[in-house]
Image (cartoon, rainbow, N blue to C red; front, side):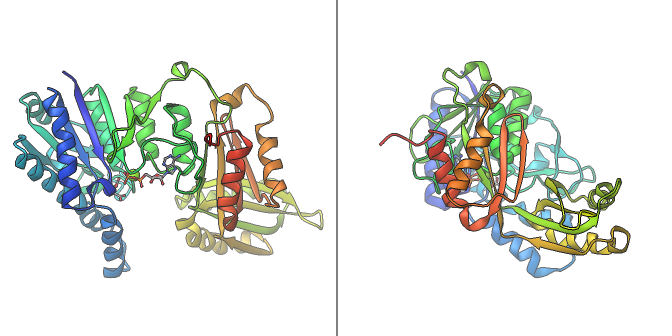
Amino acid sequence: MSRIVQKFGGTSLADVDRIKKVAQRVRLEVDAGNEVAVVVSAMAGVTNQLVDWTRQSSLVHDAREYDVVVSSGEQVTAGLLALALQDLGVDARSWLGWQIPLRTDGAHGKARIEHIDVTGLRNRLARGQVGVVAGFQGIGPRGRITTLGRGGSDTSAVALAAALRADRCDIFTDVDGVYTSDPRIVAKARKLSRITYEEMLEMASQGAKVLETRSVELAMNHRVRVHVRSSFTDAAGTLLVDEDEIVEQQVVSGIAYSRDEAKITVQKVADRPGVAAAIFGPLADNAINVDMIVQSASEDGQTADLTFTVAQMDLDRAVSVLEQSRAELGYAALKPDSNVVKISVIGVGMRSHAGVAKQMFQTLADKGINIQVISTSEIKVSVLIAAEYTELALRALHTAYGLDAAG
Ligand code: ADP
Ligand code: ASP
Ligand code: MG
């Protein structure tokens, strides 16, 4: 007997027929004698609709009320799946975040999980009842509903698996595993049977949304056996593993992209000590994260141009923060640009192999793609390019690193 957490994404729960199929899938594990907790997302598209309604209703963004609204999609699917299971003769009940309780901090809209008291849930599982848990939601320090940030039901699932000390956490989604690149864009992408926690963490944080970043962080820290697989087929999926469990390590394991970037160039700022601090200080004070940075000397030799990226949704705020300190910074102009994409190549093999970055730059140059900003870490190289080249760059790099599927 095993204790299993299964998570189903929005496409797998898109309508009542699919929810019934999911119920059958859950029953297989119950019939095999396992204890099963299921974490659900909202039906595909529902959370977007809910977010949109909050925007239409009010210009004032009260994040506590936003959370009340956007968390509701998961309440619906949790109840429906519990009903569908009962219909199959499976004992099941739904659990909302506050009922478990899954406690978070008070950062509404992007709350972090602090503690999950699984006593009640575990007792029910031990009695053979399936627990259907609404993903993406928790309860904050003041007793209000919180949400974990978009894509957060992956995090609910992995956190629950860790708290329950589950033997496995199966993430059922609309692809049959983690691929070398987004299979929707790179037709030749290959499914990876295994990927290291560390690489998956980079893939996720660089934009591969198949798993949410925090879920991978949690899986890595708690050594949760995460298996990413399809809800529509029985194909073996992708297992998250430690580095020593990988038999044949490629230098580059995957290529991710993020359209969530925006670029700002601050032109002609004085080239003297303290300027970078004067620019990035106010951004940090306003909780705006800066990702890539490059500084270049401008033509007059007295000043420099500073280019950096922020999340797309922070662009307007970042521009207004910098405009407010214009007198103090004394720059010539601000150039915002949201027509950019960040492409990242990732692989633990980079630690021991030189030349990965060079190959990236050469491949993009051969396609006539200009690189605007570069950043690197131990196991990844990222570049910022114009958004219209996304597909071309991904496919060319995929071929260049020998990742294309045979045939
Ligand atoms: P769910 O609703 O099940 O949480 P998501 O839409 O959040 O599903 O994540 C699955 C999607 O992630 C896939 O449909 C795919 O387009 C995208 N994706 C991006 N990069 C990858 C990758 N490297 N491997 C697999 N899927 C990826
Ligand atoms: N329903 C939420 C979202 O769309 C959470 C999730 O699906 O993981 O972001
Ligand atoms: Mg998702």
